[in-house]
Length: 104
Image (cartoon, rainbow, N blue to C red; front, side):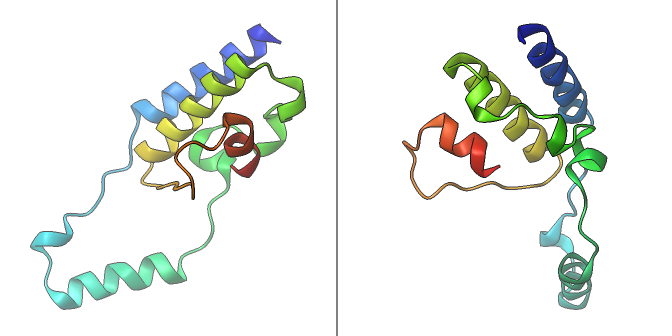
């Protein structure tokens, strides 16, 4: 299982190394900003596989992971998502990693 987790982490690191450039909203006119926001609201949903090169089906279930594996995989997922412009917020700062991993 450790080898598989390491492969997933490497794939996620590749996704993190290729971030999506965010528009500079501060330099836009209101009309340009509104157009960008409408693209976000009306745009199609993007799968985890197309964004991170890892599908949700490829991720091990939380029950199969040790606490250390969960921590490493969760950190890699969050870093890759952040690089792609996806912000993940958890309601509690001290939520256990297994719960965070399950939610993602």
